[in-house]
Image (cartoon, rainbow, N blue to C red; front, side, top):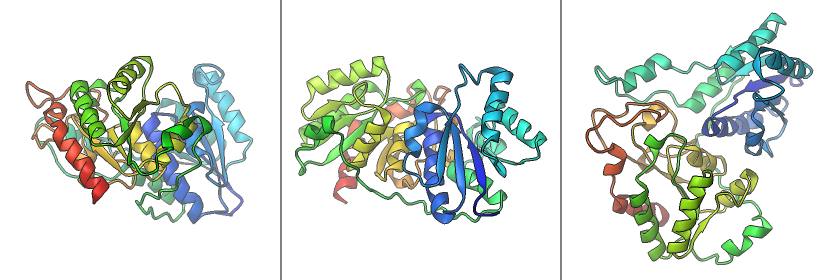
Length: 343
């Protein structure tokens, strides 16, 4: 394809998936500096793509101006103005398929992600489970560009590059000698969340050992919990509700490590090159959603024949009376973090 051509990239949600797209597009633009990308996603996710060269962010507003079939046609008309040569559909949902159909009728090349639904069903079913690692989601994204004729070899490496700390957060980083750990203890689906009482034990232990802790990710309910933890434990700070996404990414880029669920916190850390210790319940890194450049050896999980039983964590654990994620002891998590920081 000619260097001046534009590709429209579609991925509207969820937060972690969009962050993974950003990791792939960063590498794509290095490999193909002459190609322009138009990233279409929700406006809240724009910070993930800030600083990526030759990339234009175009917001989809699915609840207002781009609502329904008429709204999607309006979005198509907006995007057609870029004169794209191809559409990379990295979402494969009803909205992305509708927009792709409009472009196909206009004669534009369309390539769509293969989500591997049959393989994922085999991995998570209760009987005759096929327990093996599946293709990573970031490679599925990259495959779409390969099908469009581009060579793309992902490094699967995180590259730490701390950014200038926002003025209002500088006091948190005044002590440069203390190891700084981000904690992202919440998730969209409750079944992926580690027992909060045990998580506070992790926080208490890390706080007592002199680490500086920053709690990320959530809404009003999670903010209240995080503020209580911050009040009870030294060197622990709640960031929920106090910083926007751009500021959070900058702060994360200055951390030594992130502790996260199988959630967007892990993918945000990957995007800014920070290693992650992650906690897994009914989901499993074999499904392909491990953070970009992160290590499976840094995943904390219980071996059980019923795991995984969910791809997205929207189904309860099938491991017995107690959720498998809650069988993980706080000491195990603390020891893994210390090993990672001191290794």
